[in-house]
Length: 85
Image 1 (cartoon, rainbow, N blue to C red):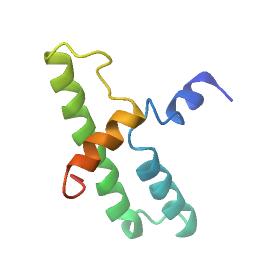
Image 2 (cartoon, rainbow, N blue to C red):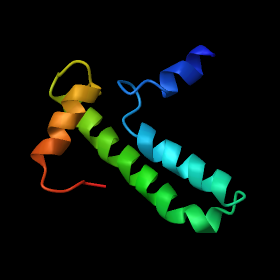
Image 3 (cartoon, rainbow, N blue to C red):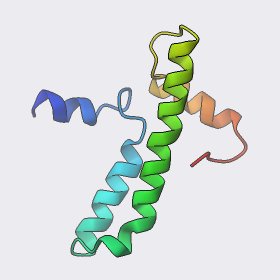
């Protein structure tokens, strides 16, 4: 498996892995009809936007690593009453 693919499949690096997999699965199941999968695309886009804002905030505050690990992300999401995306 190429390094880039391995990095994208790493849950510590890609916070939206499940949303990405869901949109790909939807496309496979619906013969690549993008209109049928628009809700999955929107959820993925919102996920990326949310975690990008978290990463920017952490970088501004000097927190390393700028992207929280998978365990830290679970804690962040657990502290919220509902999913932010």
